[in-house]
Image (cartoon, rainbow, N blue to C red; front, side, top):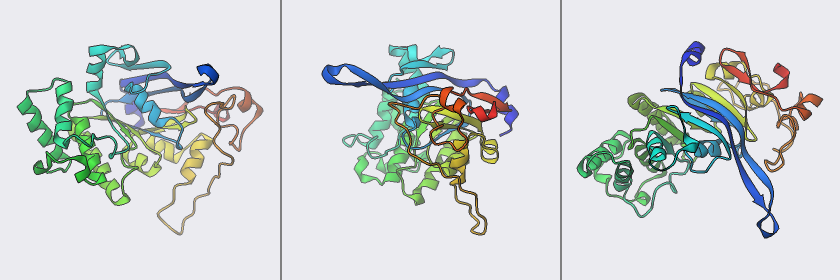
Length: 328
């Protein structure tokens, strides 16, 4: 994707200063602190494009996706969709937004009701959003299952009768049932066998093109994110540290954390070697994150300013933003 295209497009969803802090209680239920799972994240989603969200386990990627859908309630921030703040909607207004924004969950085993036949799970989604008649719902459910590779004669089977890859395909069909505009993909292939991952990834690509979908693709696998995404946001300890178009990020990473992540990707040519950047130390606790830049305790270029002052996300080149004092 050309960088100019991103800059000139109006976002379909705009997330501003998103925070999710979980209260920590002590004796007699008194609050003693907060776990800062997401702390001031901002990004835009563009129509028919895919934004990748990457970072180490526990950095807040999945919480970000779930909070946008209000599967968990935000502590602070805005998520503007069609001129409305999702975080302020209630009742029918919120349900209408959820029709347009659906989610594919990480674990295909627990995301389906084991007591519900898979065809009925898809029909139920359409029933909740009042789409079509009963007959039309059944026909569309069969059609969606066929599009993701599930035969019509498997309509009345239970989830335990399918493999993990098939269950994830069923989850994808269920997400499509409400005719969404945006799909949040929460590590949709991380629980699958490597041999199945490529099939599901290509299926997601085809579905995006056929249904004109916008994706927020959450993953810790940089190779998968590179293949899927038009642009990428890198998260560390609840904060976005860098945002850029995919090719730009991989060719010119600016944040030391991004550079370390990319250095860990193996090269397909055994005769070539990439200089490995080793991040020393453990990830700090989100209960008591470091002052200033949250990465300064592990950064090889850390200065006194990094310890005292939190860097602000600033534009470096077209559509390339980084939160790092080294690039002020």
